[in-house]
Length: 384
Image (tube, rainbow, N blue to C red):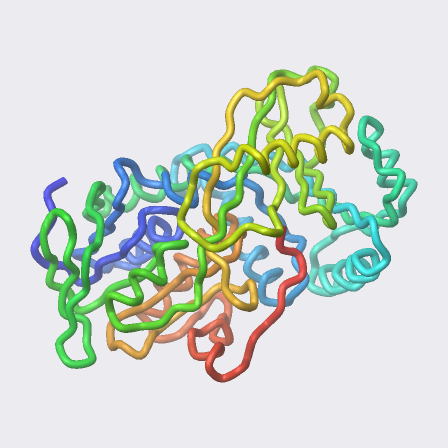
């Protein structure tokens, strides 16, 4: 699509956040919306490189409430948007192998249960019984929620973009933002590799690149990009169809079914911030060795594919919603590894804030940009 010269709002970033915001703004009747994506296709940045997990299991009220709003939207996605997103409710099983994590898991389950999320606390024997193919002799406790699971990220983005375009949203790929011009302290235009767009509003939904976009407007956004990588295996017929999304919490090591094999990933505690999305082969070997120690069947499996993507990490592992010091410059970013699952609700909330001046579905006002300067940080424990 040819780049328009003007827009009522320019949304920067064509992943789940930007696509959801574009759809929800258009659904509310806003006109002249432009959605920009620097890559050739929508959803090929951080969204398209994630593991596709969605869960209710968090350790803070606000993240649990975000899941309670967002995951039902994904369940209804086909009926409302017309796109099948392959939501597989296989459940997340988090395993604690030290007393500190086990005690925190107990507190988290109590919080989730109080908020209406039916997560179960498992004993060490129950963990082992549910994972007979895995070596978890050191398991102390576990948590399980059957409604957690997996969703196809590309289908979610495609669904939102397609529905938004039908309502008149101009969605443009290969349009990298190169600058933002201001008139005083107000947004004036967005400069891209395809030309400039005059606009009074910008929504920065650029994920791991959101701090770079912020700098173009003179706004400091405390988001750093951290590489995470994963790989898939050849078919493993021994893995049962109901195998859950398993997380060895202390190692940040996870397994879930992917086709007839598994998708496996692990966080590198020594990863330095940066935009490198190449696979670190040395760390992949570390991941494979840790995976084989937990699941001996891995020694018979081959690797089919591997890739890396970026987390958008804030100092308190919580997202940033709302306005910035520049008039007309809004932000929705910093989800610290759980942006895909909260993207549907986040886009709706930003549409409410932009059009109504307040969040109506869920009050996320405490997740504003100003909290970092004012010392109002909120800590999330369940980040892998």
